[in-house]
Amino acid sequence: MSRDTLNIVVVDDQLDGAEMLADALAGYGHDVRVATLGMDALRLLDEHRPDVLFLDLGLPELDGYEIARFVRSRFGSAIRVVAVTGFDTKQARDLADWAGFDAFIAKPFKLSDLEETLA
Picture 1: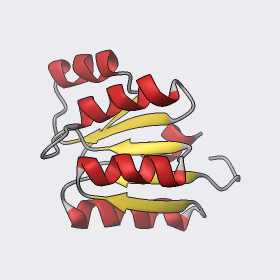
Picture 2: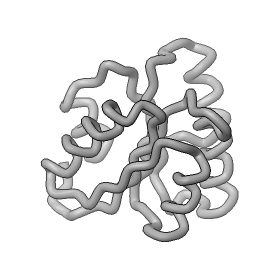
Picture 3: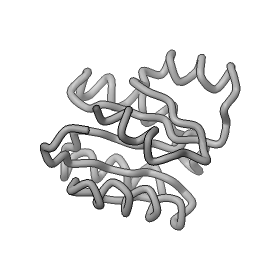
Picture 4: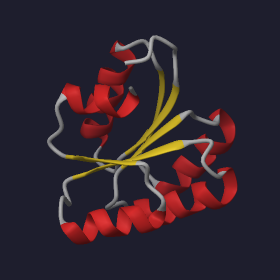
């Protein structure tokens, strides 16, 4: 994993899961912000312009696919977008590719999954 500190936003409607992921990433020395709703995620993207966005697919209001499409249209490839989801199906992976995700991590994840994604 890179030794550089990354600005990271974690978006998951399950606060416990979001905090667990954020704690793991912060343990590697990264600056991590958490959102549980899509609109909050959009605000964080503008305020903190992350290097990496860990994004759950099944969110209320705006789902992860919509947020990923927004990120791609607004920021291009400047933000690495990672799906973190319990929906590990071919359809979910295909939609994630279509929406512009850079990587896909299935829940439950291992710390090595995070390390590989950030390497």
